[in-house]
Amino acid sequence: MAIQWFPGHMNAARKQVMETMAKVDMVIEIVDARAPASSSNPMLKQLRLHRQRPVLKILNKADLADPALNKVWLEWFRAQPGTEAILLGEGDKAAAVKRIPDLCRKIVPHRTGGVKPVRILILGIPNVGKSTLMNILLNRKVAKVADTPGVTQHIQRIDLSDGTIVYDTPGLLWPKIEYEEFGYRLALAGSVGRNAYSEEDVAWFAIETLTQRYPELLKQRYKLDSLDVELEALFQLIGRKRGAVLGGGRVDSQKTADLILTDFRSGTLGRITLETPADLDNLVPLGDEPEEDAESDAE
Ligand SMILES: Nc1nc2c(ncn2[C@@H]2O[C@H](COP(=O)(O)OP(=O)(O)OP(=O)(O)O)[C@@H](O)[C@H]2O)c(=O)[nH]1
Image 1 (cartoon, rainbow, N blue to C red):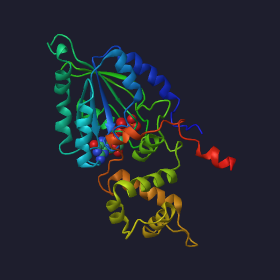
Image 2 (image 1 turned 90 degrees about the vertical axis):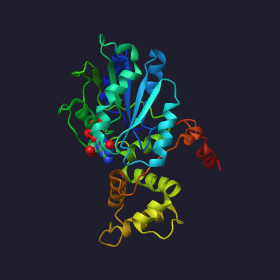
Image 3 (image 1 turned 135 degrees about the vertical axis):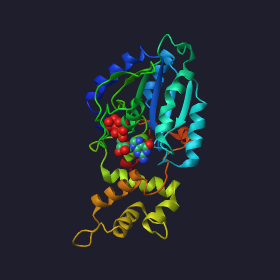
Image 4 (image 1 turned 120 degrees about the horizontal axis):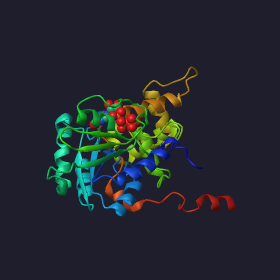
């Protein structure tokens, strides 16, 4: 089934981004530190190969991500050709953001003679925290800060007082999701519209991921003695523990899903990163999965 996760207006924005890429010296891509690979735009890799632009990866919301994996991802990105990377979200964010223009001048030293300004394209998926960052960077309210994905709309050229030129783009997804788990991780992080994935499916994905990667955090938050039950039973148990119960004693699935997603997104569950660089070796592109269903149908 095709997933409706790519709103129509993003097509126009995508074309604009490709054109703007030709005018800039470098790219800043803001990714979600909780899912740094899933939130990286695959289009950017292709465009950069073509145009050879260096990139600064900003791993934002680092305060919500696993501190040990923050370090791992930082090193991993830095090992990629033409790539610098920083964490953002822990500690003094304003101070860290204000250092970004200097860092950009180091990344493109041929522009730093003072004659020509450094031109930067800023990219990031919806809800990754781009507006928040831009507001600090520009030191004035130019963009709305909101929780709803896709609020920012047009590419804006902004000239900073130090001569840097910033092209700010709307929160952007890409037309085709490459891997199923990438889509779920983005949905869990709150960057994909609610019409793409059901909240219940995303909450199930959250619990499944947590049982595998952060079982202790899951047990602690929901006061669970053991996780040694089927996923469905675990979901029900969490609903009961959190009081999401309907009149007849049935668990309110929608409310349970909502509670789990809110707990994850707010950091109440703890500092969680949904993927590691090692996971990248085991991905199966969507459409290339082994046809188990076809076999079982034939039986
Ligand atoms: N915990 C945490 N929350 C953050 C951080 N940066 C942004 N946020 C929150 O993330 C949400 C989205 O931030 P925005 O700045 O509106 O994100 P955006 O990328 O501009 O979103 P779009 O307009 O949808 O493209 C807001 O609730 C912010 O308060 C961060 O570093 N840590």
